Amino acid sequence: MISGWNLYQTRVKCKRPFAIATGTQDECSALLVELKTADGLSGWGEGVPLPYLTGETLTGCQAVLEQLFLPALLGEDPRGLEGLRRKLNRLAVNQPAARCALDLALIDLSSRLHNMPCWALLGGSNQPVATNYSIGLTSPEDAAQQARSLVEQDFTCIKLKIGQDPDFDLDRCRAVRGAIGPEIGLRVDANEGWTFLQAKRFLSRAESLDLQLIEQPLVRSDFEGLKRLRAFSSTPICADESLRGVQEARRLAEMQAVDVFNIKLMKCGGILEARDIVAIARAHGIDLMIGGMVGESSIAVAAATAVASTWNFEYADLDADLLLRANFSDGGALHQPVGYRYLSEQPGWPVGQMHAESITLLASC
Ligand SMILES: [Mg+2]
Image 1: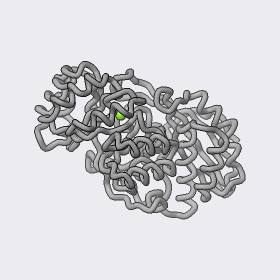
Image 2: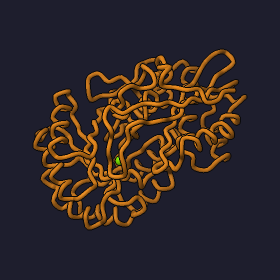
Image 3: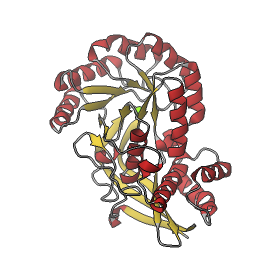
């Protein structure tokens, strides 16, 4: 039974300022939830609100957790995951990062109570997941240099941020492809940066680059545009900002607007919600990518790893915690060999020891 909770704020810094078509991030703050049972167990979950993606601010997310969600969980059996999801959904619409923090904390606690790993609780295995490493917006020369160094570290896939002038973007892609050779996977993300004509210009000239996919070439609301691009693009089109929860997944699938869904736990509200999107995608022959956001750390990336491994995602972007100078704890998904993420046989998320300087207690009960 859940008998108490702590709510923390985390503060972490990126290794280098990370620029994408919508802005640059350097320092990131997020929320950490600890659910406690009377017999001394703790379940941990991470929530990373990003206004342009989840519609939440840090203080708004904190207020929803403190005033609505956390009090509602007191006295509940954490193993009733589905019932508790419905209970929280009735208390507040949207709030996906806040719901994700609790979804992850409840799964952590359940996993510890059942004494089985989180991936086993979900019905999966802990097979390693190959991840890309992301390169932010930068010059073609610098992107090529970064890509070369990543391949030297044994990464087998690069994700390159684009979405500015399409001809400059093509230069950037050609420079990276030239630097890494034909065997290394290359995927790109335009983060809504283009008009339809710009996207068409890029895609019609990108064939020789052998791109695995392109994420979000158009503004998120333009489902029709994505569908029209898909009709002539030989590069698979992936929805990221266009896809948040189950509702968008159903519409995109019914329209056959995209080839790939990029699922992020912070956008959809956690693993149970992600599982419903997986079912929609699989029923419509849509491939799956697991994504993360800058600012996600040890627990969120571990949870995303479990999702990708359990449901056999075709693509994985599990580098968010690797982009940080230091995570809020010494835990996290394993990363050996380089370019692969997986979880151990231990129950619960790999929370590890918290770094006191990275977390601040906001409230408790
Ligand atoms: Mg993206």
